[in-house]
Image (cartoon, rainbow, N blue to C red; front, side):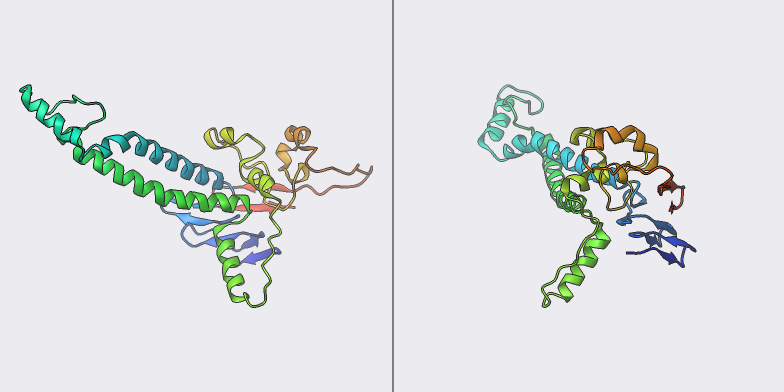
Length: 250
């Protein structure tokens, strides 16, 4: 996983970067092109994509729970009893006389909401679970497919492909969402660039240069740092993002 050169974009190609033919740009940590977001999912917006999936699943679960009981009452004796009672009281339309029992006018709407929320929730739920697995194992969809194909071709060798970017599920989560609580990371996402660089280095050394001063006090315990020698020049890695491409300056 060394540096290379991308002939399509005519620029250096960092590790884990891929050229996206839809947007015509070299994307760092490219996962896939999402037509629903009309953008390529990569290093700078992967956390927003995962948060979007989690929010969709929670929204579908909320709708499903709201319409579950009325949906179960559609063919119940209470549903027919409510129609009879409404006619007995000479109401022009069926009224809500029994709690949680819908009217005939609401029958189609409740059935549609239940089926759509269940279908979308299950399908997006599987996709959300898959991407949470990718976050915790420090993989992208492209890397997962590559690893799966490699292991399948070499299944007789009994040797799995090693992932050098896997720092443990806790640090892998922080690589994407930062050193925040789960609630803060998912429901109040930051608009700044990711705190950690896409390199297999944990602790303060793995932070972007702009965030080292702010977070080195909180993360100093994660990775012990050796005392610096006077006159020794340290290598700083800065992440530069433009509207169309991302590149490393070493």
